[in-house]
Length: 250
Ligand code: MN
Image (cartoon, rainbow, N blue to C red; front, side, top):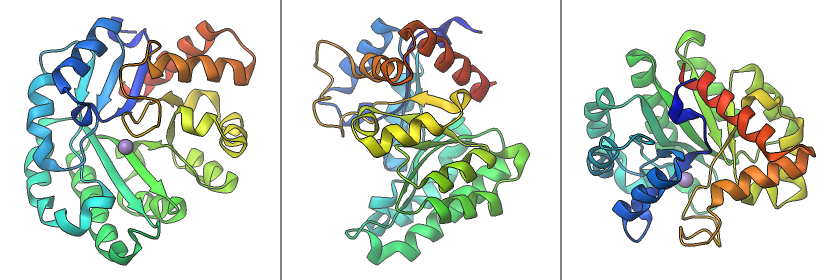
């Protein structure tokens, strides 16, 4: 496995929403944390890409967040234009929460276009938001992404146990965070997942208490809590997550 995948990883993080993105990136480099810097709009991508290019551990993803699709759907053209510049795509997906449901049809249209663009391009790795929409997200992935062009991670997954089983069959990886680990439901879901599909994420700065300034970086907290959940040494979890990341990126 290549050197940069051996440490901890954060496969879904909004570095550009920290008070200072350059400091946030420098921190990831210093701590050797492989980080996927997702973006919420295509417009935000070029700056992330420019900064990530000078690093060993940070990768920039181009995204169009489902919660922003109402006002930003026109940026799909810019998304298509930027897609050849990165292997990583996110944050994308669907959100059927009450605040976002009124433009759900628009969300589906944008997500569908993104999946088609990714299928056409090939070799993309997707970080997907699926709040209250696990089933339809999986339906769309199955319809649009052929098996050989299907590498995706369900970020902060909150679907049912049967949704999770179907997602596993569909080839999903799962990036888990401290919010999931803090609920009984989330912990039950995580232990039922195959360990070789697990990744870690912080979704910083969206999880409370994770402002990038705490003494113990959130990636360590996720790893340690996973170790406690499984009752194994944290090195075992680190090794497993590194292995999984290597598989995903291979
Ligand atoms: Mn996010």
